[in-house]
Image 1 (cartoon, rainbow, N blue to C red):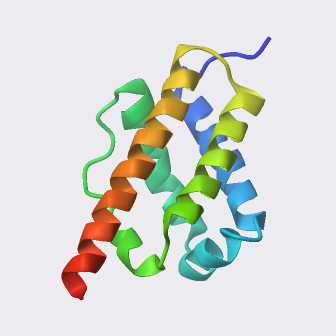
Image 2 (image 1 turned 180 degrees about the vertical axis):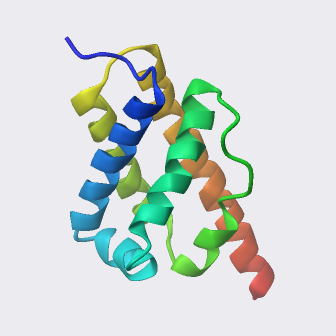
Length: 125
């Protein structure tokens, strides 16, 4: 039986496992690896705080993560792949209420991010 996500260490483990797969993914890897070359550790530290806040409702992250994605030239298919990897990573290592929240919140955030990215790109036309 797998445990649920319940601590900052669990969040860190999830983020590390997830982004290790993203880095190797033939579709997402080139985008993230180019943007984050030499900055993965800093990115992980931000994401630890972000997901800690989202999943365990600890106020560790403040800010707006969406604008940094505007220049990545990503679309629905990128978010679809992101969600496949995210959900699979959660399922591989965790189960329970917070694990389900992680998948739900991943989906809602992907939709929100994509909507904001699309609005921003329409404003630039």
